[in-house]
Length: 347
Ligand code: GAL
Image (tube, rainbow, N blue to C red):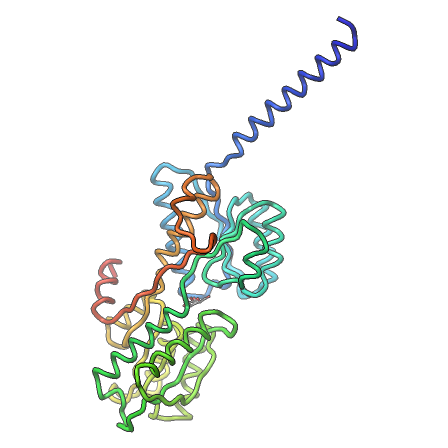
């Protein structure tokens, strides 16, 4: 065998080995272990903290079924810049799927670029990016709920109460004087919930009069302050408080409690979320009702989608709308339902 022939054989052998190794790598890179990187906008948000607890529960169940999984969670304290860094950190740590609750839902480009460069799929949740951003890459998904539905349901709860209890219209002027406590400006759940709740009241023939609205950014303490101002402005004229979430409805109740209002002088309060504290307030008749934001369903959908994206199995079973969206339905909660839900949770 000449020198040239031996070299060729050597090269072919090496190439073969390379190919073999590459194939081996290919096989083992079809990942089985789900490593979730979760980035969320603010650690002080009651609903999101419980949604993340649900996600941890889901992951524990998944592990108990004999699968390998882990989770790394970062809260951004309301800063998009911090969140972008955290996403980089999650990628560096080896997370193979990112679950991102954006701080600024209109500003996901840096995160999308990072994810794309590293080929890590992203499941946005709860704070929905606009369609154009969702189209930036084909490995972007969204899990959440339809804001419009929650607004309509809150409006329906109000209609049911007003129609069944003449006492809601305390001054008997045939109109319901109301105020609104709003979540963050620019959040899909703020404007759309308010609009739909108010439209539902109107379309059901309820005469309403808006006295005031205040932005309280989903936050109980801020809502209490806003409500104190509204009370000082309108005294006992307020008959209905529509809050974009439970924490703000509870903040409004705190304000009245602080001022020692008697029960008969209180307006009707309605929230959205069905957080544990919210459900307890409905059970105790402090909150007239709420609309359940299905965090358990959302967490289950996030995990199901994550597993499918990482393992490449089970994608057919994931119920995606428009190829990349999952919306979990809301449902209305009044006293009986709140009691049942709390019992179910052993609370
Ligand atoms: C809403 C929820 C609020 C707050 C907000 C944060 O869906 O109702 O309580 O958590 O998301 O994005």
